[in-house]
Image (cartoon, one colour):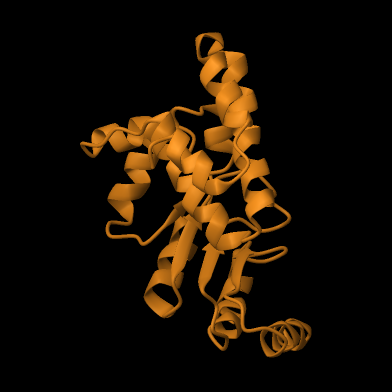
Length: 191
């Protein structure tokens, strides 16, 4: 744990940026997480993302929800859950077990089923559209990346994939590719 403390001391003393950490619950055994959490709690972590498996377990076996529950009870850090939410039913079971959770991270589940988040939103009385996603990315990329041309490049990359799936939108997509500023991009998409 001393090595981890030295590492985090270096990180947090060398920047004023917000720092989030994604962690497993240990290397060999879930019991390793208690001391890990004590160390994390010493720092102003903006979000602690917990994948409740050990490094040894990798992506096999059942996730340890009891460890995530333990973190919620013991830590004052903003927590985010990550791990094995591949279906609407799995998400609903997790949401039932952890009501009022602040955040959840989807990884492989959304890669395997890009409509998963839309189905989840629909059960909550909301619908997500492609335009909603583009607006969220527009805002988030500006916040995180900052550089206008880099943000614009990343946003346009999504439209490349859209063109593959929606040939009827190719003219609209060409117009988006031609935008040279974020202001033009936003105007084109009616943000």
